[in-house]
Length: 359
Image (cartoon, rainbow, N blue to C red; front, side):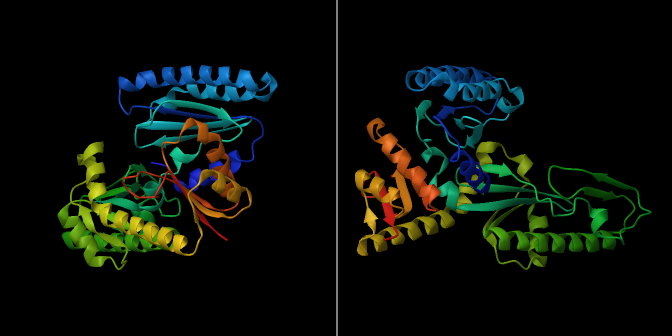
């Protein structure tokens, strides 16, 4: 899943680059043996990009760009962790990759501006949540949207149970295991039942406080996952009002990717409807105020004048219109505006494009 904060930081840097821009999109695969072909397809894309660059720019303007793409193609560790799709944006001295949760058509686009739409999906950018898998003595946390999930880390949260509670029974047989989550697992084999329950209560209260802080920082709600008994106990101690009503009542490691995605989609559906309703209202109000534009030439001009606050576009863009749209999208982002790609099934723009204007 696209991490919105990391994406925006990467794009800010990329838009400062000089020279020609290369945008490569290709479908990829999560599992062996299908993913063995992905770097081969990418190599073909590099060759296609090089041919297109040769037609328009002198080699000195893009030689380093191709070298960076080739280094990525040869990175075996990178290709071992792909999803359903991949976007690669490169310019002289700059390169960024974005894993996509939905398959995308293979494309190689070379021009004066990046093709950014596929990495700005509306619902993945706005209808997000955290998903936390809670057991009796550990947790893992993911950032999720309707399109996918990505595990995250919270470096400010202490990593082990003994670090948190000095009164833990140090005489008990204790093993601490490090997990991909942030709290180590502790096993006190001689701890009394009431002590175990007391420690669990402290642990759950600590998590609730940490998640409350995270919610205040990001504004994202949280989906709980785990056994029904653990979740019931956790909700009994938790004070935060940001936990969604829907939950996954089994540990995440008992679900495959498709099963997890389906459950997340169902739980997020009310939030998705809320986001889409909000955008529908904003579009309606912009039209009433005369601040909505759907003609691409007018959108392009308004973007150049800094008047576009938000640009929405369907994913599919005619090749003859793409360069003008890509330039407008770049200008909107550089001027602090918002960019979103939408599916016609999710939101009716009344056309292929819609810009909401500042004035």
